[in-house]
Amino acid sequence: MKSRAFLILLHGTAMTGAQWAPYAALLSDVADVQAPDLPAHGTRAAQAFSMAAAMATVEPLIAAAGRQPVVLAGHSLGGYVAMAVAERHPDALAGLVLIGSAAEPGGRGSGLYRALARGYDWLGPQRMARISRQSLRRMVDARVWPALDAGGFYYGAVTPAWTAVMASSRLAQLRAVRCPVLVLGGAWDQLHVHARRCAAAAPQGRVVTASRRHHLWPMTHPDEVAAELRAFIQQSPEPASVGAPAASVM
Image (cartoon, rainbow, N blue to C red):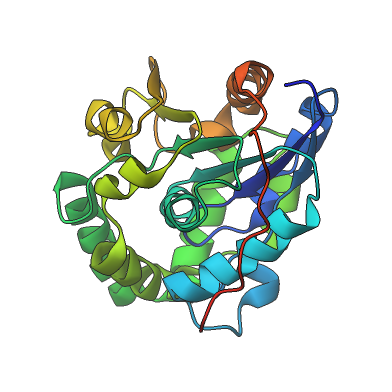
């Protein structure tokens, strides 16, 4: 890109924008980074999750970018939100990146989340948060963990968020997207299972699959994911015109 990018990073279920803690520094040479909390998570924990509310969180950031080319990237839940935003505002983005969010809702990937949601509901949000802290502390990058832990874990959002995804999200939404689309995921990530189908639905789709990586790849190996984002930003053309998105109707 000729201009410095405005990169919006959307987090996964139960996490917060803190999962992207190292990325502003890692990508400081090519982008200004924003990582908002989605509804029912973090600073927006009191707001009920809906796809409309999630899009309304992202749209003002796109408008605030002004003439900067906007690249929108989402991990897991954030990827499905990003897909919905890109469908609604196909001329507002210079690029779209879907990370661990290439399973057709209603298919095998969402079945996994239905099972997990039932488990989360049975264990309860507080117990799930304790379990997550024990496992994630050992798994995620040392630059991610302090911010992630401080941001908290919001397992009460899992069922409403994925109910919304399964009700309204489809890979066919990508047919309306006009910007380049990068589908990123680990070879061991069950939500990367339809990556080729996802990329084929987009007019300018491309798949990158990392060997020996799983669903938490953006948090376990941020340098690798940042390198993919940097290459995508540098290769993506600036949109011919940038249209500010209209406000969502709640």
